[in-house]
Amino acid sequence: MNFQSVIEKLKLITVEPILFLYMMVIFMETNALQELIYIKSCITLKNPVNISDCSYEMKDNQTDATNLATEWYKYNNTCLFLFTFISTFYVGSWSDRLGRKLPMLIPPIGTVIAACINAVLSYFIKIHMVYFFITAFISGITFGYVGIIATSFGYISDFTLEQSRTKRIVILESMIFIGCTIGMKIAGLFLKHVHYERELNNFVMLYIFEAIICTAITVYIIFRIPSYSLQEPISCSSLFSLRHVGDSLRTIFRSREEGKRTKIILILITLCLIYMGNVVQFTLGYYFLKTIKWDFDKYTNLYSVQFAVEAIALICIFPLLYRFPWVPDHCIGMLGLLSRFAGFTVFGLSALATHSDYMVYSCILLFIFSEFPVPALRSILSKTVDSDENGRIFAFTTVLQNLCFLLSSFVLMTLFTESSFKGLSFEVAAGLQGIAFFILLYLYLTSRSCRTAYEAI
Image 1: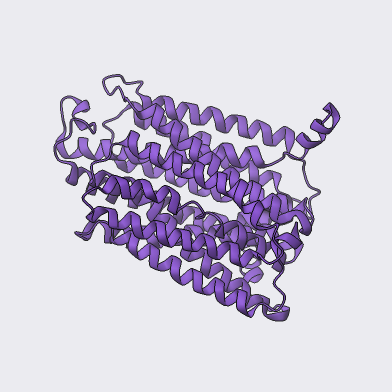
Image 2: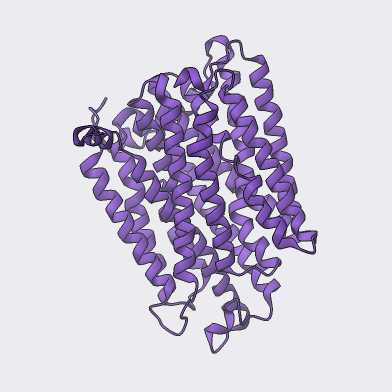
């Protein structure tokens, strides 16, 4: 491979670094916020003279602090997802009408502001948790990861042919999980030994690092992502018109030929069930592992390895499957749902096991195909809707994702705190993945002409 061919290959890289870096930042922030809320909950309960008494090694009342942290994290998530739910009705329509670049710039700028506020709240470690609602509001109205996902997948759909779209979507999807892996590991390294006696503690440094990364993302978007020709002049009335909400809803519910509307709705229901499982995995996993006496470093090591395994499977095994003509996107998605069902079931039952650590670590292999369903379903959706609807359909999937997080956070986190069997939420999540499997099986069996991933490539 000569130098010129290397340059040509590098030119194909566009939104992949954006999604990778932003998801890395999001998982750094999410895990740091969970730990920080826990520390502040412990301070609220005990008001210790030495804040180090609220570290994992020194605390003597784990249950009360964990339950209080779970409650406040639930309230914070509700605030975040409520504002994100409202704003994402606009991001998809904006990106379809005004181009991908402008909506893509908003999330990293908002994250820089939110990171600076979180750094201040970390510097004054005894400030109450209620002030985190400020950063939840800012992250919500600036679209957050929802905006980055919608605009990134919309951009890829714009600049790829249908024949190669599945491959590019898989590559882009893998950026999410590589970013998650590295983000969790970085959070673990920052917070492995938190020096509470210093006002410039590890939480402050992590959030400063986050702001620097998001600034770099903003610069990259400005100079690397091309601007689209606008379909209409920009004005406040056009930007914030309720027409954008109507456009998003019409994309889903308008009449389509060959039963495509029913197909789209069933795919969205399947995605909802998958997203509800993600609430349990990413939101409750941390607090669940604390109940079986895992510390933050051990938790981040587990999830970073798990995400790495899932990303490798997405990059290496997924492409092998679509080379077989008889393997459609539906079957790849069903394989992933079986993997999720097995992983959630064993993870939840580990709360009852004597040697729970072995069961938890076995979930790394059980979850290996767990991220196959989402790219498979996104690929099916992108081929079902019209080319000028890709931004709206991807934005609507993230609207649903936020709605699922909003509702599931209340239901499943309440189930977690109230139930004596702490693994019950994971068993419920396993059941939801089973329902999603049968919906996808129905779509496969009733499909007139099942276009395979091999044919798409």
